[in-house]
Image (tube, rainbow, N blue to C red; front, side, top):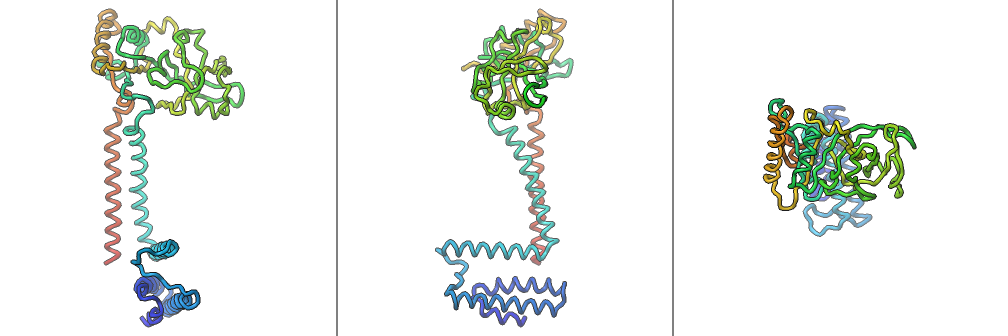
Length: 375
């Protein structure tokens, strides 16, 4: 191509890259605008570049550093990076079909992997935000005749387990409830967790402000106290330091704020506040109704297996004492993380492997496109 004569004025180590760039644009413009217009563009571009390099050398005394030179100044390195990026952008822009297909394939693979990895990391691998989280267990009831291998617990069984069990520092029941917060500001529907005494002791997570629940606050009439989460405290009450002792209204009833939970408190149901689990005498005696979740913290030195055997002994005694309600029922104990994610662990790992294969396929497709383009 005749216009390459002008590139002799360009430094020798840059002639081939510059010529290749202009040639690629020349062919694209020939197909689009015709040969005469493409030739005119190539001559003008080659002349402009040649004059620019000569001007820099003659007027400013600046040459272009060799590509492989070590110890080049930072400005020179940045300029080289800028030129490389510019060349890459022009190369991709000149072939939009190839660029769109390659970017779409990589975006699909990388996006799916990022999303699934974030979920798997948060659910399976990241440690729970509690001290000695491997000592926290979830206790449920196994009722094979009903098809429940790890189901909710009846109130009467829970109170018997808590009273007779010696393997736990604390054992507590919980139940999810929705309440309406009214009073100052707009009414708001909140997700609360009704918990029995010892819930925060089982998690080893005391409030940052105020105190936790007391045993007598499980009684109806003395149960209207509340612990706010850090998020609700900041969002609704502006992180007021004097929040302890204030009164808030839940479902039309006044509740005394006794504390604020630590910011690292976390629960799967995205809880806004904790209230005491206060049941009537009739509800406390229920054995055929199962609606409570139970957690506990093992005592130091007590193995999970020993706690399980102790609960099984209590369960067999209850089955003999109350055969109509408890025959065929037995306690079931798992670590807290396993109880939360045990049913989805395999599915999440399979999904992670699947999206990994999608990324490999996307990379292989892009590699094939590059080979086809090179040929």
